[in-house]
Image (cartoon, rainbow over all chains, first blue to last red; front, side):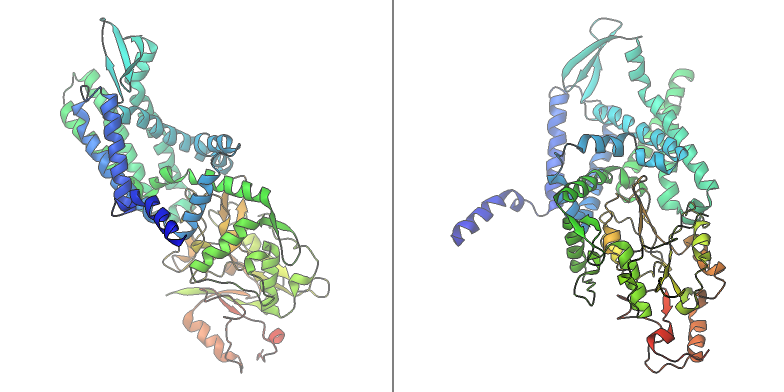
Length: 360
Length: 186
């Protein structure tokens, strides 16, 4: 029986055993996937846009940094827990709604302020749309061909999706997609910079490398990108080769820096959907009752998980009464501390906490 | 000169100036992050303030899956970074003192950051700057040592630590001597 279990375990791990580390496995799989997708998308590498090979190399370096950063992060006990349990709950009915609210319309940022929401939508959607245009072009998942004069074929993943007149709306939107997103990003970044210069809290907390650098890089990418268009249209291409190198450099630096700075929240943010699912699912399973007042304040599962995570960190808050401090609701936990300070059991007096919200 | 927040709990007169001052700190967006509790509300008027004690090993930050709670070089445990906080509320469960507040609308945790915009430059936090009864003070370690000399304590417990707290903290709390059965000289 034991031997069988051991064999099962071994066969289950063969894929992992083939690689030296998570990092090696993730890198291998993603570079292989990129190569296969490009092979299909470019019809066996016959439509590779070699102008863009610098971006290709930059992307692969970026993926290296991305996996380095995020595998290390995913190994933290609380992160691992939410990722593991959250992914299992990904098929909940509420997932699409939560995802749209958290990742597309940013409702929670709206509640933090309309100015911040506007700036975030401009920068966020500007960047996302740019990525949807840029990466397919770089890896050859999308390209254009021309059969009859005056009509473009849009080819996606090697298949002709549609044929559009070269001076039509769709064609013009395709040519100018990156110009439009550049304007969006420039507007958003200017709003963000203005806020960072004016808002006292932001001024106190911001750091050049963490807060300003990503904004300046986005600005550089957008301005050099627009400059390319400007040079093509108004200068008949003068200076274009040099500017395209500057643009390429700025994009690659931004990509490589992304996992290590403020922009790391872009690939990282979908975890808020996992966290929401985790909270909703386990709240339905059963709520924890406060050991003092009996109020239901958190799911049983999360309470247990937090206690376990703290244990891993060698932190254990046991109350004299034998339960863990995490098993008390927040007001009771605060009163319990007052009780420790004063020697009088404040938390046992059945009076609701009063006047805790000063209206400044 | 490094200063720290120092609490003399029995001085509290329950005026809640510290709550009002907290709302006025830059970035607190007119919401206070500290608390004032009645010790024995049905019997007397003794109150005590409670705020983040800025643990040296903060449970909130340890339990945060998003690394949103950063520890400043001054030792202050900062409020959640707005772009990182994923709204899981682990920190509210982990904190042994029940300090972090959660805004469901903004999907964001916020807590006392020791007015980091002020304290990083050595200016006292808002709560200590307005406290009329010297319950909340902003002192250097030397000044705290001088205070110690005014007291006649026989149990070696000058400021709280275990078992009244759950670990070492950056904010120093001086327990009410009378309630603990310890002589104080004033």
